[in-house]
Image 1 (cartoon, helix red, strand yellow):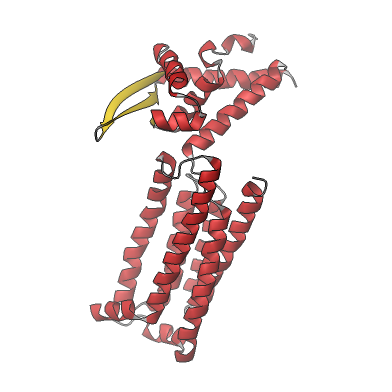
Image 2 (spheres, helix red, strand yellow):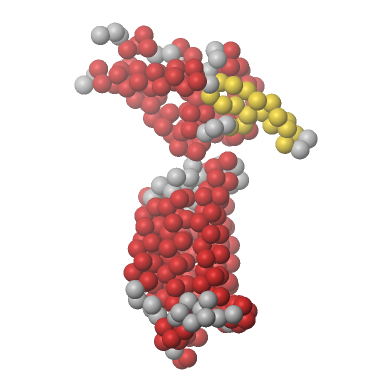
Length: 216
Length: 99
């Protein structure tokens, strides 16, 4: 082996070790696909609730009206809220299962410095967003909930991209853009949710699976 | 121009020590088990390479506890960081020479 080849291999080894030690790379593309499918199923159920009563127009009407804490309780008890929670939990569980399987296969432990940092990076924008959206519900700005959740989720993904597969930032950018557009198209939140949380996750998941896991 | 081979550091002339340094360059601190998993080697093997890096002043060792378990973490020293960067530069020059 020539000196040049050896040097190149050593640099590649250094790069690989830096990557592996600082990022959580077991995140499976199939997790994204599953989360996306859950979101689409959730949106389908939500559409059933929203459509007959015409919540989209309800969105616009109640926009900017003052509401007391009672509305938050109403909101929590609403069928839409139940659907949202069920969707979130099933997406999270399924996403975890596929990432757990991949981490077992690649022999990298799922809980370590890298995954801890990833979790913190995701949690900060998500928790901040959660408080902000809770307040939006309190003051009755229902129309801003869908765009708000898309924007905060997108920011969380962009933040997370430093600690896992870097491509996830593109998924983040798309959520942020959808959220911003939705801000000026109030009342169409469910459609933006279905595109952002559903379709975009599936597209991202398939692309990541194709790029990293297909040949494993 | 000097021959870049002279700048290649003998301490880093080993895949495992190179791996340890790479991990420490991008992480503030890494513990023993994480290094073991990253490099996929035995305790004894890892310990001997860590010792030689420590003796050369490239890394620092912190012995601590998590509960009752010992938790030994490692981080790179200023000198170690400088030497590692010089080593990477030298590797790069070696490749450039061929073109």
